[in-house]
Amino acid sequence: MTGADHPVKSAVVFINAPKDSGYVLGNEKSIPTASVKLELKSPLEPQQVSGIKRLVAHSGVPNLTAENVAVIDSNGNELSAEEEKEQSQVSLTDFKTQIEREFQQDIEKKVKTLLGSIYGGTENVEVVASVNMDVDKKIREIITYIPSEEGENTGVISKEQTKSEMQVDPSGTGGIPGTDTNTDISIYPNVTVEGDLINVKDEKSYEYLVSQVTEQIQKEAAELKSVTIGITVNKQHMDDQEKQDVLNLVSKATNTAVENIAVMNYSFSIPTNPTDVPPSADEWLSGWRLYAFIGALALMFTLLTLTLIFIFISRANKRKLLELQQQEILEAEDEFEELKPLGSETPKSRSKAMLDEIRRFADENPEITAQLIRSWLRDEDID
Image (cartoon, rainbow, N blue to C red):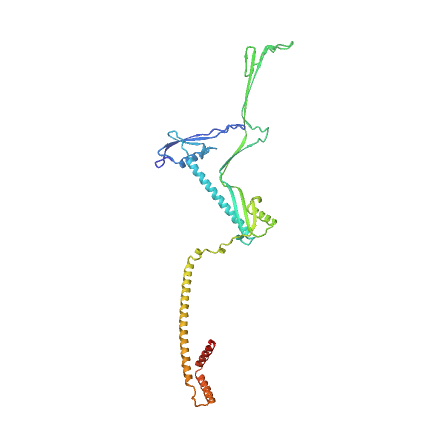
């Protein structure tokens, strides 16, 4: 990160990597640490500080983590990456929410398709799943000690150390008749004589090396912790055996414990198919339906207007026709009066002549005769 375009002018890295003592029963574990001393040209962002720590942590030093790397400027101030950690935590939360939602939708779709084929379609089945995922990063270190193939499984001695001390009083020394005197003291290593006392010291120590395998596992993938599934079926009656069959089927299909699945049945009170829901007035009158509705209203108005005009004209024509008919009737009555016989004729001849004249008039003017008869009948009804 040094150079003309970078905020770091120079950097010095110090790494403390303690050597493992190899003791099997050692109580203290060696933890490597590192520090980076920077000479800055401009302040660093928290993300840049975090990047420096990760870079040093992956430099090849075993068990060195970014948490054990300190970044210090030329004034002795330790630079922090807390803001970057908070942002990372937020991103981790978003990732957890997203992966739980995707896994939940996958389960719901799978179960709905499975049961829909049994109960007449997916619209007759409702499924709700709840998923809990663990997305925390895990690092696990495993140390396996391999026993020796032979011996007492003590391993290979790399260092041995023991210590012992003893004082001996030579005043009791003497001889036995017929034998050589034993007053002389043999010289042994680590033996000192102080007056009448003899001090004997012995020190030994042992260090064993054992065969071991160290394995470090880092887990970053999401892990499924728990799943619960709720199922409702559009069915009026369902016995216990059928419910148990559904539980077993869903359990096998989703790899979920039966106790984490619930099944209920009842008749759905709402339309399950969106096409069955009647549209609102605003939705129905939108688009081409609005223009069709306006056109229908205009057509109805036109037909109503034409009907009223036709009725008005028909009544006017009928009124004129009645007037003409009445006029013809009056004219026929006048003509009939003119046909009356003279007083010199006998009554019989007059009647016969009148009948003949009436027959002739009726033959020549049947319509007028009919109208005249109807008029007489109407006058008699009125009287």
